[in-house]
View (tube, rainbow, N blue to C red):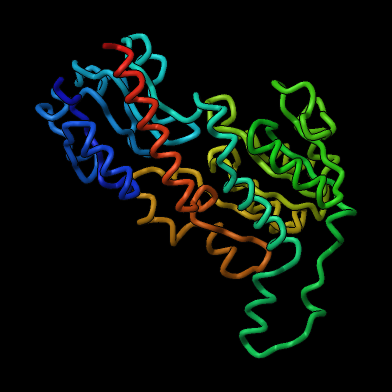
Length: 323
């Protein structure tokens, strides 16, 4: 049986064992990025690996007449026209459609909690002071014990449930807003609106996927309802919040601090060329109450290995079922 033709982009940086699987299971075409696509290449492709930041549009799908599967080892698919792909009988192997598997993948929830602790307990500036030879605890006292703070979680799916469990383990009062989840599996209290969650929470974590309906979820109005002196953690997607409103809330003291692992537009091909000039980064250089990490929430080697392998497995199982 002939192996299916797959197009893999090196920018995906799959782990060596998963690259070996691709070489074994497919007739593999390798390019650096989708910008190197040619009509002849796309005409041959049966399996397309889809990196974030490069849209798999209806037009691109139409340019791949032999296409049978689109593969993305991500938990969201804003870069793929899933509806059109399915209308053409094309399988989308995205981890969003593998909820049981994702229960094993915990690093984003863990990083959320790491950012929360680092922010509220001033760990980074305290570390810098110690490196400078200063041994004085007084400038770095946290505002309160976690056990005396309330945690608000936006989104109570896989990651939201994990973070709720961590919050309860730390003795926090935990609430969540999620119109699709009536009862928390972790004993968190449900609130009916995002405004209510903002008004009742000392710390808010954002853990919802990026969809059209969630873009700009945290706007100036929501920031205005947050408690004075509260904290915000975003490990979901940058598109979920209005960064101008966030910056204003930090500058006027509405927020005591924020931690971001994601940025609006980070998956655009030329994002890194302008990131150094971003106003939020400028603020973080001059203030200790904004932590920024470069989207490392899911970045553990074992998670990379497992998620890549599972997305490949989803595509291979679909192709085998077709025969």
